Image 1 (spheres, each protein chain N blue to C red):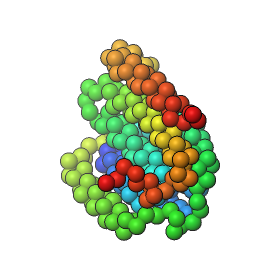
Image 2 (image 1 turned 180 degrees about the vertical axis):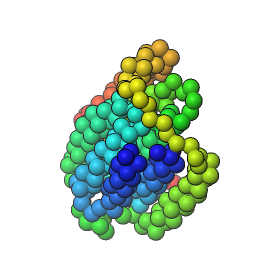
Image 3 (image 1 turned 120 degrees about the vertical axis):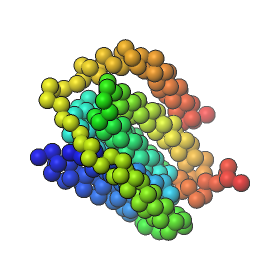
Image 4 (image 1 turned 60 degrees about the vertical axis):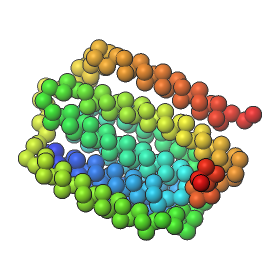
Length: 161
Length: 101
């Protein structure tokens, strides 16, 4: 059952991501990004990482998309294919395809036969919180300082002086 | 579910993100492509968390850290994009070449 759900979600996610980088209307691109992020969140749920999935929905679909749409609106994005692609587009396709073609066979060779075990004991949110606040307490604090620095930096940069 | 499926999906998303970064001209779309690439990395973290014995959820914690840092990066990046638009009235990456040789 999970296999079929994963295949469908993976197909939808990849399609939405490809549309995101090829679409002509930039606002539609932001909506395709919503589909991509939700697909990744569902895959997180399939991998029994429900807290990461809901953080993904809250932060990415809730906050990041709104921020990106603000960015699109405020910069009055042009609409039209010719204005959207750079001249090196013909170079970007081989680079992306070559990376995919090199990486996937290596992954299949080294992780063939390993399968993901689905936990049966229910959620792991409590264990995740315990891990964050005991073993990873120092990185957690460093990340909060980094967020504060990013906040101050963003306010300073966007301030009209 | 074989772990290679998840890794293949993550690789596909990462390559699409690479294409977006290289081929798109609008700076906001480039930021979106970077978000897609970071999501691919998160998929790998969570998948490996499930197959590595005794990982004690380290992969999921790192995925949370990556999400946090992606949000910080996006905030600063959009501030820079807005600043560039205010000064030069364009966010086209072909025309913002002040620091390029």
